[in-house]
Image (cartoon, rainbow, N blue to C red):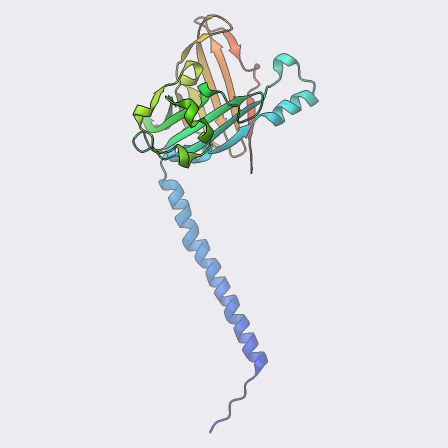
Length: 245
């Protein structure tokens, strides 16, 4: 009967080579098989879904406000505290995607303005080969009851058009977003609002820049002669940094 000598070192070397071969093959698989599918999945998302997923999160201008104080920025050029949040919620009877947002001013992010607790429907549009997303706001009829769940997309879901009403004042401005080099650029459609400080109708113009790190916001109340009578400090938009939990 033949005699086979069991060399433990050779067995160990063979096992190690097999393990490293398996790891190498696995890396190649994930590089050439999984990654392209992820990229393809991203490409197949509609523009409105890409915008919705990029918007999701919490943004706050507290760092910009602190920087203004540290740099002794004049009061008329400094920025106040603004906090905004966005969640995606499931409401197929209203649209797809649907985003719910909150806005809080100068204080606790949970003490947000009920008038700016908004439900947005996002719709893809193409005009003269330019792709854009129209983002239209409404609000819940029973705002107060839903406010405790304002940042919980799962608990907010399932509502219908019958649960919504027209947003009020400057919160009723429709936004149009287009892709930019770093994310998305947004601008409001003509939106005429009675200014409580100027006591006259103004075209309320919102402009947004959305990146991976921040949401930049500027707004201006413009009269019928093109004069800017209200809004953000000149050439100094609000920078709401994306918060990372």
